[in-house]
Length: 106
Image 1 (cartoon, rainbow, N blue to C red):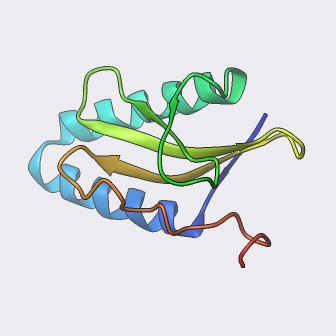
Image 2 (cartoon, rainbow, N blue to C red; image 1 turned 180 degrees about the vertical axis):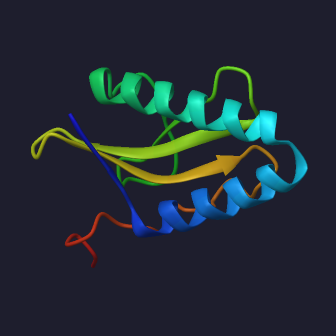
Image 3 (cartoon, rainbow, N blue to C red; image 1 turned 180 degrees about the horizontal axis):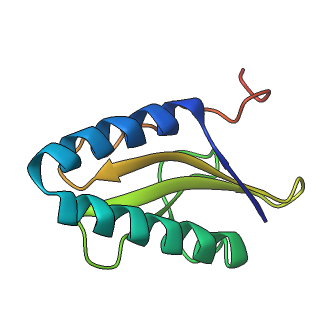
Protein backbone atom coordinates (compact mmCIF):
# COMPACT_ATOMS: atom_id res chain seq x y z
CA UNK A 1 0.00 0.00 0.00
CA UNK A 2 1.04 3.56 -0.61
CA UNK A 3 1.59 5.53 2.62
CA UNK A 4 0.01 8.98 3.01
CA UNK A 5 -0.11 11.24 6.04
CA UNK A 6 -3.14 13.32 6.98
CA UNK A 7 -2.25 17.02 7.28
CA UNK A 8 -3.10 16.87 11.00
CA UNK A 9 -0.74 13.92 11.45
CA UNK A 10 2.08 15.93 9.90
CA UNK A 11 1.41 18.74 12.39
CA UNK A 12 1.31 16.25 15.27
CA UNK A 13 4.59 14.68 14.17
CA UNK A 14 6.28 18.08 13.90
CA UNK A 15 5.21 19.00 17.42
CA UNK A 16 6.34 15.63 18.78
CA UNK A 17 9.69 15.94 17.03
CA UNK A 18 10.30 19.42 18.49
CA UNK A 19 9.30 18.24 21.97
CA UNK A 20 11.57 15.20 21.85
CA UNK A 21 14.55 17.02 20.34
CA UNK A 22 14.49 19.49 23.24
CA UNK A 23 14.27 16.78 25.89
CA UNK A 24 16.07 13.76 24.46
CA UNK A 25 17.67 13.66 21.03
CA UNK A 26 18.24 9.92 21.51
CA UNK A 27 14.51 9.34 22.05
CA UNK A 28 13.77 11.56 19.03
CA UNK A 29 15.94 9.31 16.85
CA UNK A 30 14.36 6.18 18.32
CA UNK A 31 10.87 7.64 17.71
CA UNK A 32 11.69 8.33 14.05
CA UNK A 33 13.11 4.84 13.57
CA UNK A 34 10.18 3.07 15.25
CA UNK A 35 7.63 5.16 13.35
CA UNK A 36 9.25 4.34 10.01
CA UNK A 37 9.42 0.61 10.77
CA UNK A 38 5.85 0.44 12.04
CA UNK A 39 4.31 2.38 9.15
CA UNK A 40 6.16 0.22 6.64
CA UNK A 41 4.86 -2.90 8.43
CA UNK A 42 1.32 -1.52 8.37
CA UNK A 43 1.58 -0.80 4.64
CA UNK A 44 2.41 -4.47 4.09
CA UNK A 45 -0.05 -5.81 6.69
CA UNK A 46 -2.85 -3.23 7.18
CA UNK A 47 -4.82 -5.57 9.45
CA UNK A 48 -1.99 -5.69 12.01
CA UNK A 49 -3.48 -3.04 14.28
CA UNK A 50 -6.79 -3.34 16.05
CA UNK A 51 -10.02 -1.44 15.30
CA UNK A 52 -10.84 1.63 17.38
CA UNK A 53 -13.39 4.41 17.34
CA UNK A 54 -16.78 4.37 15.72
CA UNK A 55 -17.40 3.01 12.27
CA UNK A 56 -14.95 4.94 10.07
CA UNK A 57 -12.33 2.20 9.85
CA UNK A 58 -9.72 3.57 12.25
CA UNK A 59 -7.11 1.14 13.50
CA UNK A 60 -4.41 1.51 16.15
CA UNK A 61 -0.94 -0.04 16.21
CA UNK A 62 1.45 0.59 19.11
CA UNK A 63 5.15 1.33 18.78
CA UNK A 64 7.37 -1.54 19.86
CA UNK A 65 9.09 0.17 22.82
CA UNK A 66 7.88 3.77 23.04
CA UNK A 67 4.51 4.95 24.45
CA UNK A 68 3.06 6.08 21.10
CA UNK A 69 0.66 4.48 18.64
CA UNK A 70 -0.08 5.03 14.97
CA UNK A 71 -3.76 5.69 14.30
CA UNK A 72 -4.48 4.83 10.69
CA UNK A 73 -7.13 4.00 8.12
CA UNK A 74 -6.33 1.44 5.44
CA UNK A 75 -8.09 2.18 2.16
CA UNK A 76 -7.84 -1.19 0.45
CA UNK A 77 -9.81 -0.03 -2.60
CA UNK A 78 -7.39 2.81 -3.36
CA UNK A 79 -4.38 0.88 -2.00
CA UNK A 80 -3.49 3.65 0.46
CA UNK A 81 -2.62 3.50 4.14
CA UNK A 82 -3.64 6.83 5.71
CA UNK A 83 -1.74 7.77 8.86
CA UNK A 84 -4.29 9.94 10.66
CA UNK A 85 -2.21 10.71 13.77
CA UNK A 86 0.54 9.42 16.00
CA UNK A 87 -0.74 9.59 19.55
CA UNK A 88 1.01 9.28 22.92
CA UNK A 89 -0.69 6.84 25.28
CA UNK A 90 -1.37 9.69 27.75
CA UNK A 91 -3.38 11.64 25.15
CA UNK A 92 -7.15 11.49 25.04
CA UNK A 93 -8.25 8.23 23.44
CA UNK A 94 -10.41 10.10 20.93
CA UNK A 95 -7.61 12.41 19.73
CA UNK A 96 -7.50 12.36 15.92
CA UNK A 97 -10.65 10.29 15.45
CA UNK A 98 -12.56 13.27 14.02
CA UNK A 99 -10.19 13.40 11.05
CA UNK A 100 -11.26 12.12 7.67
CA UNK A 101 -9.40 11.07 4.56
CA UNK A 102 -9.09 14.11 2.30
CA UNK A 103 -11.92 14.07 -0.22
CA UNK A 104 -14.12 11.87 2.01
CA UNK A 105 -15.27 14.57 4.40
CA UNK A 106 -19.01 14.59 5.13
